Length: 349
Image 1 (cartoon, helix red, strand yellow):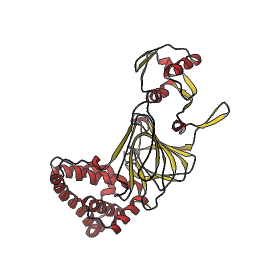
Image 2 (tube, rainbow, N blue to C red):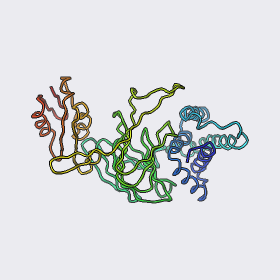
Image 3 (spheres, one colour):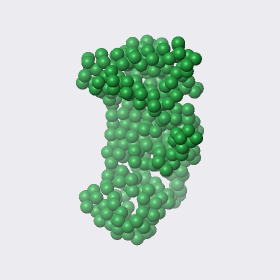
């Protein structure tokens, strides 16, 4: 269901009532339904939350926050002139109510922050974790990743924020949508298994569906939705080189839809995107330059390459327990190079 102005305004009003603790059970059910039908609307919570928790000059800075979000969402926060007496009034009332309640909240709960309601789990470089969320959802968290989640019991949706990579096996609950939010995507599901890769320094964000169904909404492009089928994956490129301006001069985010990458190693087949949850790092015909961030996260090391030619060397391998020295020794047999290891620093030349 496209996110129209009426849905947009209603979601903002309900989010404001939720922040104020005045939302009824029927309104909470309505909000959950709207968020499930419009996963891109999860970003409107940023707008309401930023106003609510802002801790400087509330009257002026909250207004600035609204303007920033209005600019971000463009026409999504503009109300049709034909609906001024209804839609605009409700939307403006929600914003004004939020501003007033923000000041009250700030005075009463000065020491609280927006992150207080979230629990955060961190997997450092070289560490992979498996955990279970309060609803029973199983999560595998890859190295150099962090995940935070809201109070599933109190909130109308199960909201998870992810930086890095994680594999989810989501417990079904048709009354509470499970929403994963990364810097570039909002992913809405009810119960399914999939992998999300969203490292800040990578050139793309990936979502890979193993079973079930998921719907993705691209941040800042709320009308661009993608529905994945099992064994499909989507890559959203966010390198400046792939942002193509349209006729209006606005950026057009580029994404590709493809199938899982299956790699045959000896007599066994692996799924490259999810092999890491079995403590296996699989790569096929990848350049050394592409492998560096993966190896740094996997082994918790910093790698420098002094010879540009080495960056173009290509490798195929299945890493399952080898330490970094064993791996480099094996790679030397494929393409010649030298290396030095000093604690967590590695120089390849």
